[in-house]
Length: 193
Image 1 (cartoon, rainbow, N blue to C red):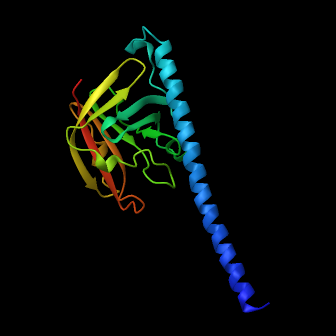
Image 2: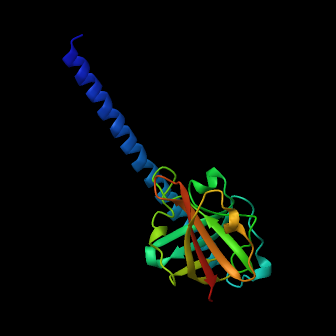
Image 3: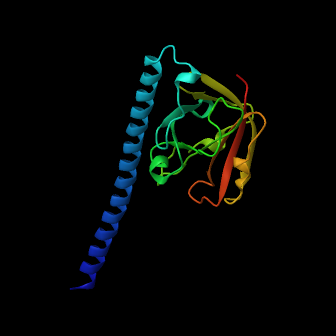
C-alpha cells in the first residue's frame, strides 16, 4: 500500500469516528428529551386525576419512582425528580437524596442532577440562577415555592449540603465547571410559599 492511500484511509476513519461521537451525543440528547417530556406529562396527568388528594393519601414514593417536578423559570428549566441517586435514575431525571426530607417537610430536601452532554443536561444552566430566583416544586398535593438564598461552590467530598436544617430548605447540586466536574455547584433556597 502506498502512503497516500494509508493517509486517506486514516483520515476517513477519523471522520467516521467523529461523526459517530457526534451522532451518539445527538441521539442521547433526543432520547433524554423525549423521556423527560413523557415523564413530566404522565406525572401532570397523575396530579390532575387526583383532585382531592391529601397529604395523608400520598405515600413517599419508593426508589426510582417519581417524586415531583422541579421548575426554575429564570433558566427555563422543568425536570422530573425521581427518588434516589442511582446512575439509572440520574440518566433520565434529577434525583432526590432519600436520606433527606421530601419537599414540603421541615428540613433539607436535596436534589442532584447532571449538567453535561455525556450524562444529561438537566442542570445544564444551573450556574445562571441568581439570588432571589424562585424555584417551584410540583407534588401530587401542592406546589411549593422556594427563593434562592445562597449560591456556592464546594469540593466533591463536602457533604455539608446534606446537613439537616430547622427550616424548609431546598438544596440543588451538580458538578461544576461543566465538562470538567472538579467541584460541586450548590444552590440553596428557602420555602416562601
